[in-house]
Length: 101
Picture 1 (tube, rainbow, N blue to C red):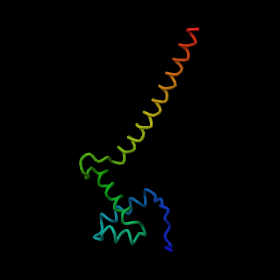
Picture 2: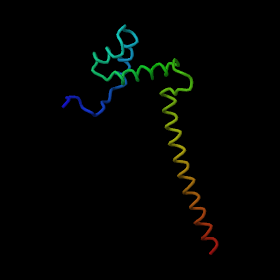
Picture 3: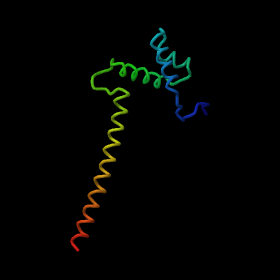
Picture 4: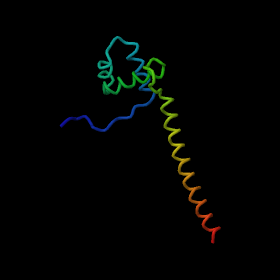
């Protein structure tokens, strides 16, 4: 059995930023830097890719971290507003029935 855990670790924004800077400034591969830091090469590669996107160096149509955050917030607002509209619709129907009596 492996000594590695299947649970994903959480890394601070500062750690990620420093790891990305190390990849960008060194002549080592992402895999070598990941091994040195004790992180997953796939994870580090994803951090570097997202950092490039956030700097505007990614492919067209890919969302930056800020845009993703805004999208999540907007979807939450839509769900909240839909729930409010549903409640108001039920209240309107209730009071309309009550007025008919």
